[in-house]
Length: 628
Image (cartoon, rainbow, N blue to C red; front, side):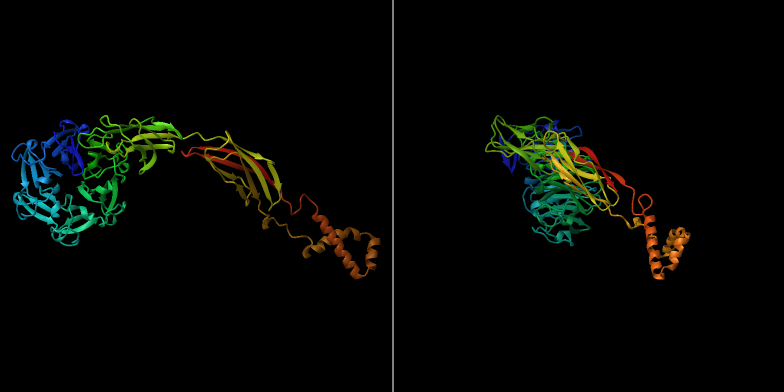
């Protein structure tokens, strides 16, 4: 029989199994978690009213609590004692286990298997500072931390304080008991904090507080309190920037690694965030609420209200994925896995057997294929829709389908070529809770590129003078009628100084036969190609005339006639004869000074098709341009 406690599913009666593989065990609202020096993991299994241990072999055992809600057992075996909704756990260097026995308003200690109360009277309230911790009153203590000297720090949540037990004496080290926010830059004991749910201490003795309802992380150093993350607004922002400018949403548990990096359970943002130096980033969770992502990058995984992290090393940590009833871990490779609690799509909570399994071929051609989502829950028939989500980068809806006989077949035809991390998500109905499947990896195979031909149509050789334009025509013909990718077209091999206009330069996917034109405007003659000075110019004119007239002057009859001519007429005749001679000389030779040798250029037109997977197919054709 299943009951609900504090919004979480839990067994109404019975003891959870022990001495089984941790991933086969069931948890109920796992809260704070902690590693000991040997690497064993301790879990405050809140709604099961027990403290559990996962050893290095992955075997889970109960180390405190019977599973029955209540208070009993001090001075006896911890596994025979009763706890009430334990939310916090910590382990010191000697292996002693400390428990925030939340609804019993006590802090209890397990040493050598025996349990005792070390703080709290069992009555909710505030009293006892500077006196014996066992005579002090607490109010819903929810998180613990132990420093290197063995001092114990308590998030005394409903007293809005952080308290410290040194030896057997209790004191307040942060918070004045007033619910609110003020005091940054002043004495920590004069500051106001609001419902702290997280506490941690670093190797230097600095204290860190998950100031939950103030949406902040605060630090106490040398007795002075400051805010190091969060600006008081309950939302999500600021990744990869200054932590003090970022926003958080109900930050709860904290953990610090050996390098001083601070892990934060940003609970209502469904993320684990890391404060390194003064900057903040997400290290687990994509912000969506639900379950997905095991076996993939932690930053793409889906979490549900994580309550606490636990740093194992500077590159590995665990987290209590509270509403998924799991403990998950992230290794140095950034990949997330479930290490405690069932992770095969189980909705969570003791006594439930609801599953949602996504199955199908691991690869499909682009534009086709489907996956099958199969639901089961103790023989019940589910109704409604199952959605397929792509969590490869964020969370994107792919398609959905209705359940029929607890099976939904969902199309994957719209997925782009490449690898996709997919989950199925069911929203639930009146008899079946919502559930998300484990990740299914699907590879979409890109289609082959449609082949095509590229040919010149019309004249393939043209001759123009410098400065003139030649236009060539081409035809691109897809095989099978239409293209399945876009094609880009370019031209190369132009004459020096020439410009080209190619129309079109891009042919869209889905196009059929396409005509193209290439207009090439050649460069005009440059000044360097102008002819040399003409012989008609003044310095050469007398010499030209002399060369031409010299044979004539040897004729006595002509010489006599020239002598009898008037001087003016003789001068005119001289100029005309010299000009004629110059023109004749200019016309001699091959091409003269203005001519240039014809130049031939091979112009290449290239058409390149590129698929969505970046595969390419290329064809070329050439034409000849002669510049005369």
